[in-house]
Image (cartoon, rainbow, N blue to C red; front, side, top):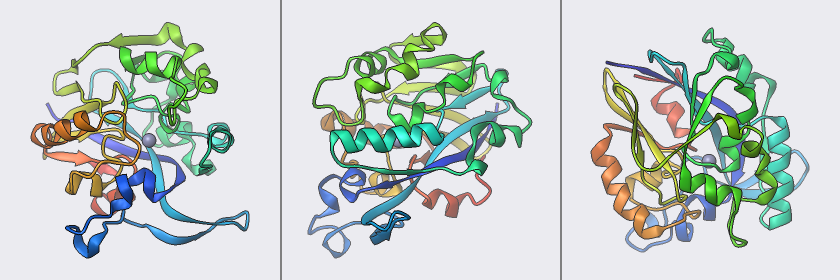
Length: 276
Ligand SMILES: [Zn+2]
């Protein structure tokens, strides 16, 4: 059994270094005393004339080719969700800048592979942060697989909860009939497994996919970027640090090829966007 994984970028966010790397990557034992993310920019000149610093990161989803059912992992973003992301992060503190283009439209990108959103049977949700749930309503015939804990915290977030906001409930409240909650690990098809790892969020899942070159691990935002993975250095946005550290080691044992979710370094390794 071997599958191919298609990476589809649906947009871009400007992410502050503190979100990408716990403690801004400072540590005397690190090269130069501080590690930085790939593509980090001290000065980002934005279209609105303001200036920021941080990393422009992709917002991908994944289409898995070769399975019996038509399966995607996460749903990416769209123009309305980008706007919502900016308004909410502004309201809750720490405005983020979100971007998307017409070429990044999910229907258009799936169309290039000859697939329509209506044909998708299964949507695997690595977790329920806004940059992953933007297009939940685009797949009317899909079942959504999500960890029960993840959905519970998402629907009723505690007040001090970065990136879960009550205003976002509609992304799942409106499709609740399509949701299959799971608790723990699950096999979706032969050679396609879900493993609960938490750490980044209560119900973060890793998707393990058999390919000709080994087992690919799509880790959601457990690893935001390659630096998180290489140095076992958590992203700044985490839920349970102890769980993160324990499962970071586990993930590297489970998968031969690990794909951090928000890092353009991916394009250096896989210029065609395909992992196999
Ligand atoms: Zn994300």
